[in-house]
Length: 233
Image (cartoon, rainbow, N blue to C red; front, top):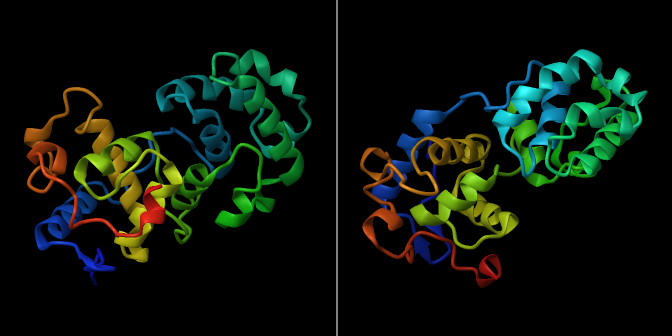
C-alpha cells in the first residue's frame, strides 16, 4: 500500500522524500498524544484547554479539575465561574470555561458526543485541529490531518507545505498524503517537532528527514507540493 501519493497535479514526489516520510511514520505511528487523558471526556476537556497553552501545563492542572468534574454530567451542572479557580492559570481561561460548560450542557453525557469532524467543529472551542486530535485518539477514521503549532513549523521546513495558515497547510498535506495515513502523519510531524525539529537549535543531524529536508539542505520545495495557487494564498 502506498503511504504517500506519487502524483501531485503536475508535480511529482520524489522517491527519497517518500521513503523519508515512511520512516517518519514508522518512528511515531500510533504513539499516544502527549495530553495525559484517561477517557474520551477528559480528552475533549484537555484538548479545549490546551489551545494556545502547553500540554505539560494542562497535564499538571487536570487531575484536580477532574476530581471535581469527572464527567460531562457533573460539568453540565457548573457555571463558567465555578471553573475559574481550577483553570485561571490557563491562557484564555474565561472563554474556555464558557466553552466547556456549553459543551457539557449540549452533550450531557459522553455517549452523546459526536465523533465526526463536521459535528465536532460545531461545538464551542473545537476547531479542525482539536477535532482531528479527538478523532485520532478515539480511533475513528481520519477526516483531516492534525496541524498544530509544531506541524505548522515543521512541514514548511521540510518542504511539504508552505504558509502559516493551519487550514491551508492542512489542505496541502491532504493533497500530498494518502487518506489512509491522514490520522497518523500529523502527529508524526508534531512529535518530530517536539523532539527533534525544535524552533531553535533543531537536531538536524539526527533527524530522519534530514536527507530530504529543504531547511537542512538549503533547497526549495518546488517539486514537492501541490501547485494550486489557492492553497498558498
